[in-house]
Amino acid sequence: MPPMSGKLPELLQHQAAVAGNTQREEFISQAKAALEQARVTGLGYDADAVYAYIRERVARKQTSRPAAIKWRV
Image (cartoon, rainbow, N blue to C red; front, side, top):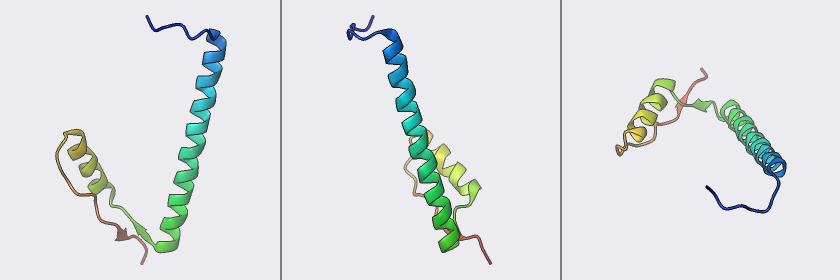
């Protein structure tokens, strides 16, 4: 059993919810910035290459990140 922190369970739940919301807001902010960068530069990543990269990383294999490519003509 974890040590008691002296805080009420409701307070711990509230703090966890606030932390989760903060992380979600940061994730959304980063996603919006990435989308804007893609629109400005015209560069993006091939989904199949990204999925392959993730599979290799999960398998703990050394691999290089996929290269950005132009997605606009």
